[in-house]
Length: 166
Image 1 (cartoon, rainbow, N blue to C red):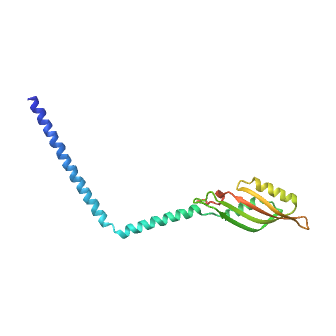
Image 2: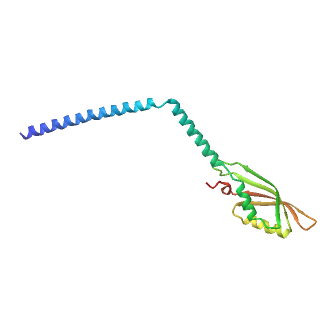
């Protein structure tokens, strides 16, 4: 009697598992058909448009990553320039810039006039100690008749200063 009960329970469990398997297979088939129906409703042109839009977004991201804001440097130069020193012939160049704006060389070339050699020496010291200037090279010194000094300066600028503040 006990053996028969165990056999009956085992057969019922087997039939239950087999029935559940068939139920799951039917559900998978129905969901697969539903997915195929949805895929067929989506137009191929729409998929192409979405892919093109994604490409445009990627290009826009690259442009923003490489964008530099030169105008921010003018305020910094103004703040770090002595009253008796003036600059002219401003030239800015970017060389070897990589994606994201790193690894390149941002250079400013300027001509200037200082009221005296002492004023020029003070300006040189300021530029060498300002955080946004990585390197300052002064050259072409020329004494003027009024005691002033003409000079040229090349500044290597920290790339982070030229990054936009979003």
